[in-house]
Image (cartoon, rainbow, N blue to C red):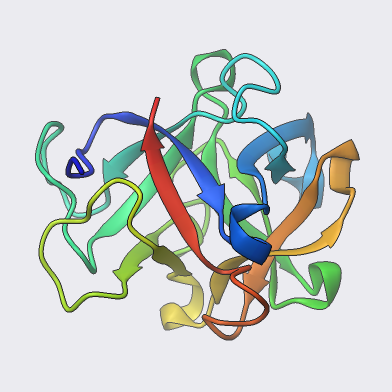
Length: 180
């Protein structure tokens, strides 16, 4: 397996029920008053760039450097060259902690677009296809873990929000990155 590298384009797959949770995707504008809605799609290429994400360092690491466990990252969607940054905005979506959408800036509010990349291992470089959890930095890291919950949002496979726990349901908070 290859290391995840800053500046590289990835598709991000959800682990729900044996990796059947779909691919992180943008679809439709204006959810929670933010830029684009976020849900999962059955394929990573539902629309041009909608399921493609660029990993950027939130701490100033340069492109082409390896991503390490516990790094703080921004995830930039590639729809039309810039589908916004993965963000939390609003509470209670799908009965979960926070709603997830994209924002036009990487941190619309303090920590809303910052994600800590947690692995099941103790540290080191993060590998493609490794199981990771994405923990949101909103309100001093109370933003929750990126999660799929509920079906059919924006006409897509599953809804995406954050969960207060890293293991809410059958892999719903597990993700893995595949190079585009």
